[in-house]
Length: 253
Image (cartoon, rainbow, N blue to C red; front, side):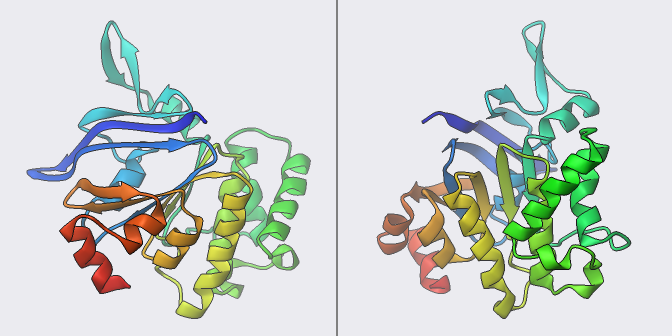
C-alpha cells in the first residue's frame, strides 16, 4: 500500500491556545482512519487542516503526494494562491455535521452543481452520475425533492452523494451523525460502511465507537491536541494502554 495522506509535525494555534501540538499520522490508500476524543481535543481542526480550511502553523500535510496549501519557492514554503488551493480541494470530499445543502435547489441539482460549476464537466454526464450516486445512497426516488422535504438523515446522505460527485481521492467526515436524531444515524452509517467496503480512503471524526470498531483500519484517540493512542480499533477499544484513553472509553462505552 502507499500513503494517500501523510501528516508530519502539524501544529496549529489560536492565539496562545495550541490546538494541535505536533500531529503525525499516515493513512494508506483505501483505508479508513477514525478519530475519537473529547470535545476540544483538536479532532475537527485536524480534519479541516487536511484540505486547508484551516492554515497550519508548522509541519506539513501531503495528500496524494502533493503538499497541501503550500508550495516550495526558492527553498522555502509559501502559501498557495486560493485558486490553487481550490484545485487541490477537488481531490478531497468533506461532509460536515450540518448538511449545508442549497435550500432552493432540488436534491439532484445539489449534487450536480459543483462538478459543472467547479470542474466544468458536461451537465448531461454529471446528471447521469448524480442519479447513480443518489441511487447508491438510497435516494434515487427523491431526486426532485427539496432539502426541506427530507429528514436529517436523508439530507446527510445527499451531502455524501454531493461530495462523491466530485470523484474525490479522499473523503473527510466531521462527526456526520452528531446533528441527527438517534433513529436516523444508522442510515448514514450504512452509506459510510458501503463506501469503506468499496475502497474509498476515509478520515472520520466520530463518536460512534461501534462504527469505528467495525469499519476503521486504524483508530486514533486525541486529547489536548496530541495523539494519545492509536492502533487497530478492536485493540484500542478493548485494551487501551493509556490511562486517558481508558478514562474516555469508560465514559462513552
